[in-house]
Image 1 (cartoon, helix red, strand yellow):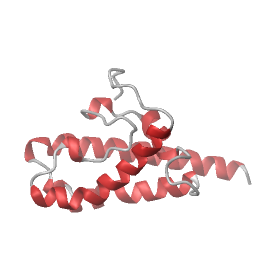
Image 2 (image 1 turned 45 degrees about the vertical axis):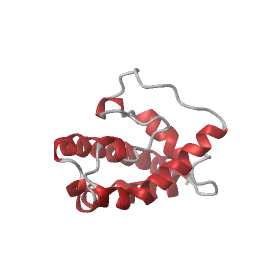
Image 3 (image 1 turned 90 degrees about the vertical axis):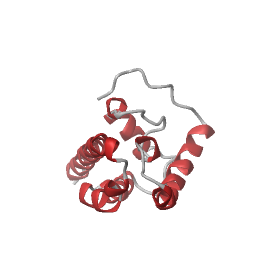
Image 4 (image 1 turned 60 degrees about the vertical axis):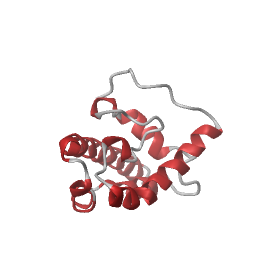
Length: 135
């Protein structure tokens, strides 16, 4: 869904701060939802530069974000993927967050969540293949 028109990603320590902001955004989501409907911009999408819509979601950028050694230092890539899959799992996301999303953006958010989950599943499959090949 990448369009190439997304803003450039920050580098260095600015990137590390993005991971902290991402985790904080997830922590703050219940309070945001209590104050009013969640919008696309409120969802903590797993990319360094926040996508403005579904078309800016990108497999490679999601992979770089989730598998970055700056994200969850000390955790293996597979563990990072597992925690993200739990967070983004469609049933869990829908039951916890989708009903709190603005009705006019719900379908777009649902498509975005589906895209993220497919990407994470592909990354997990690739990790499993690498692990199986190492045996």
